[in-house]
Structure formats: structure tokens, C-alpha cells
Length: 180
Length: 180
Image (cartoon, rainbow over the protein chains, first blue to last red):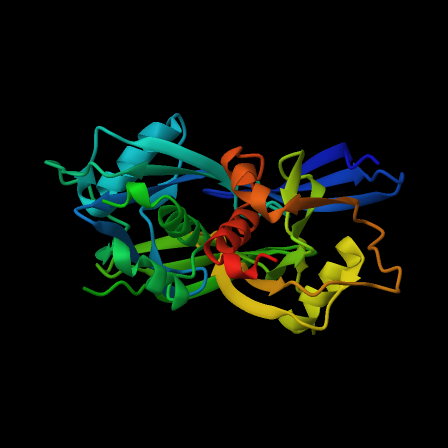
């Protein structure tokens, strides 16, 4: 069995500040034709940071659902940036910490049914307070330190409702040698 | 410190078959104004299904990245459906199995920076072959059975690149009493 769809045509429908919406005409494996709505996104990074036995999370208002969410530090890849650079920049902007020891864990698509956003997850347990005031003017976040031995409880309480953050915290629980 | 943004105006920019794009003018906590691009999405469900010591996954072509991805059975909530109903419908359409014993695990936002898509994750270890031929004409998927004791290896290989699927598989590893 073959799965592949054949792209017949792509049309840009909306081009915004961050996302672009495209309509793809495709031919399905059975020869039928259909259209797919695709959102193109520049991608993002997220950082699982552990410091003195605590995980560094942030609380942030999210306009899409008009809720405050608990998340790992994260942000979009800006044009011309490497993902490694974005990870350090976002960590510093959102938390005031930097590091010279950061590891790339893995990459994942967050909504592959319609969007190509790929998030790269990083890990560090070597945080250093930054000398620079680098907060993004548009960003209002509050730091939250969660002891590693409370992470399981935090996940079970379903207070964390952000997929990348749940993934990062599950990863921490599964790899507890990283947790101090 | 307050995080809340105050919505001043919402404008619909694009209305598609599945998604809607809105532009929100907001007032930030510091009084500055900015705009946010928001994608409205009907939401989706995903099912972690374990049967005879194996996890039921599917391989599916995803036009957004033009790749075949390994995923848990999943799909969009259609208008008028409860999420419980969608879970059973998608499970049946994509795998040919149904169940009369399914548990809601938790809900998560997959891309809260710009999109309100909420995924509800379900669990079942009571699969029953369905009598009905219910495959969606537009959907071409191949079933893949992964022994529970190979899940850790599958995750480590980074062959699974879909966030909801990684979340579901990490959940399984963390709750191994569910695994048979």
C-alpha cells in the first residue's frame, strides 16, 4: 500500500506576521483529488531546565485561548537563527538565565494534520544568571520553580496543559539521572 | 504582576474548511498595544490503544510536511460531536477496532502560542474488531503494532516525531501497569 499524496498545486491564501496559510490541491493514492489547508510556521524551540533540583517553568498568558498556561521556556525561531541560538535566546529572554551546557533532546511536530511547526526540545542543568537585561518588551511571564520530586504530581493534576511542557516533564521523569 | 492581555478587537481574516485565522488587537499589561495572529481549530482526539501487549499505531502521510508519520489513531472533532464519540469514531475509521471501555486521560494544547487546538487523549486496552467497514475515503493509513517492551526503544530512535504520540507513549512507559 502506498500512502503518498501527490501535490498538484500550492496556493498562498494568507501571509501574516508569523504564519502563512496555503491551499494544496493533492491527488490521493486512489486517484481522487482533494484540497488540504496547510499552515506554514517557522518552528520553535523549548528548553527543559533543571537547577538545584528544581525545574524552571514559566506562567504566560496565551491569547489563543485567553488563559494563563504553565510552560517550559520556549519561543519561535526567528529568521536567520539556528535552533541552538534560539534556545539560548529564549531561555535568557524569558527567565534571565543562560547556559554554556545545553543538549538537544529531540524534535517533534505539534499538529501535523494541518501545520508544519517543528519544535526542538533542549535540556540543561547548568543555568547561569545572565548579566544582561534581555526581556522582550511584548512578553510578560512569571518564573515558577518546581522541585523535581513534585513533577509527577504536577502532571497528574493536569495543571500543565501544554503538550511540549508535558512531553518535557515526562521525559524528565523517565530519565531521572538528569534530575539533580 | 499581572499577565492578562485585554482583547480590544477581533477580526476574522480567513475562514477555511477546518481552520479560521483571526487577528486580535490586544492591550498588554504595560499598556502597549500589539496584534496577535490566532488560528482557531475545532480540536482533536487521540487514542492510546494497547492490545495483547502491543500498542496500536498508524503510519500516515501528512501533507503539511510531506512525510509519512507514525501516530496514535487521532482526528478532528466534527461539528456536533462529543469528544468521547470522536475518539471511538476515529479509532474505528483508522484501525477497524472499536471498544466499550475507554478512559479519558488528559487534554493538552499543542501550539498555544498561536492556535487554540486542544487534543483529548484517551486510553483503551479493550479492543474489539469492528463489524463495520468505516474507513474514511480520504484517509490512507497502515496499522503498526509495537510490543510494549519496544516502546522505549522506538522513542529513543526518534522515529516517532509527532508530539501527541510521544506524549501517549511516554505516558505508557510511566504507567506500566496499563501495559498488558
